[in-house]
Length: 446
Picture 1 (cartoon, rainbow, N blue to C red):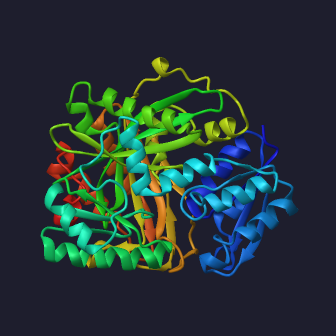
Picture 2: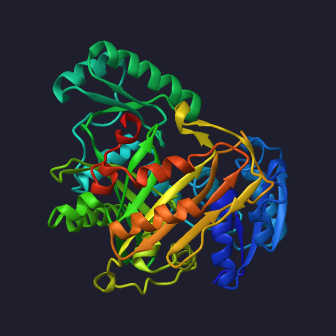
């Protein structure tokens, strides 16, 4: 096992990774920007190093400085968390060239899955169902219009290097398709330096379902069931739960989706933790959309129903250990829900609302978990994602989990700035949510 791990991240995920490392007796090294001086993740770690100014390009995306700290601190592994450098294959190559273990998949698989058009084509060859669309990257605007006639409207234009909804635009006719292509190309070029795009037919009122997978270097691969992430704003998740209410309605759907995810894992020779994401319709038809080659923000709901620590298994797999988790021994225990608590204003199109946290009180009780990277007196700055904390509950069934979440949200206190806390309380009382009748556009249309 590793002696020391550098956590190349910030906020709640850096704090969460540090706690598991410390429980396992692994020395932890945190990094921080000038804006994050004294942040909780730096206090939990055994050591903390300043890596630059507030802006991410000069700190958390500064791979050279992070590797400099890794060598100075004498670590033998780096955990990237999620976001930032977690899916940057150049960073993986640089880490490995420095003789340090990267806790995640191989760079080659990361590159494959990071190109959404290539990943779609690869999934199709592996026998995984994909949304009807273009075969790879589309040449230009005119080619997109010609293809749309055979695919059928409505059409989603998607950036090949995209993620989190960036470079994704919906078009319901030719005129709007041309505008969508132009917008996607412009945004993708700006965000990723890659203007390439592809097309998919838009599935009306889709459900967002993802399968957690875990694979080792000995040829073993397992799934840890599914999560539903259909409550979203701007194509980004707000509430996640496991298991999925949609999947639970259809006999055999869980097995088919999980087997499809494992088929992709085996075909790509994937190693470590990952997530295979699908969209599904109410009839139970499902289609591959992408694979996230890292730990997901919403991984705690899987941990709650599976009774394990995913970060611990990431570390063990990266250290060369063999999975001792047998697929047929894994079962779903109850139901878990996660609410993402943001410094944002739901009444103003969910715009970020930076500010200083004056009070911060966490709820308590059996089956209640709070993953947080802040405390009272800390500023939520405009430099980073405005996620304050993730509140997770676990109960015997979905109805009990909703009631427990409502109680935990009511007990939660975040003072001094605008948050989406009251929105979450309201959603727990919503009849559609309670019935599980949700889809990816539901929250914004509500």
